[in-house]
Image (tube, rainbow, N blue to C red; front, top):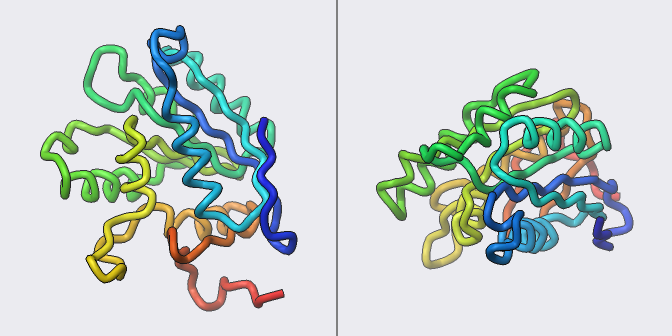
Length: 202
């Protein structure tokens, strides 16, 4: 567990980050998913974050149990990386859907649209997002570069947003399911909320 100090006025948040890989979890190679997730979230959010990291193999029951454990531990947001392709051992979407109370298909649709701007094989990605209780669970791609691209979206040369990343919608989604108020660093990723949902500056 790693504590990340940030804006004292922002709500604290507990975030689960899960890297799913047979080889990384068995020590064949170094996991890069957890550091990439933690680095991006630390830059993107002003909230004080407590991270709950997990490195596990591509096993459906293990993945489902880990997601339930993190939700029960109070994680308002759980991000996974790895195991979302068509290979025989890629079972992250199935394990995620198995613990869902609601499916949120827009997240997966947008991730594939963003990734298609880079590689035609993005149509092979099967990432899903779900709500379980008061937690949002999102499957992300396996590569650190693709993680950042799908979370942030695509920017024009002048820095203006060309295609919205999925994280722009995450804070308001968490509002709607009863979680903490997430505040973003706009230069990394600007959250979108209806005006009626924006908290006055304290």
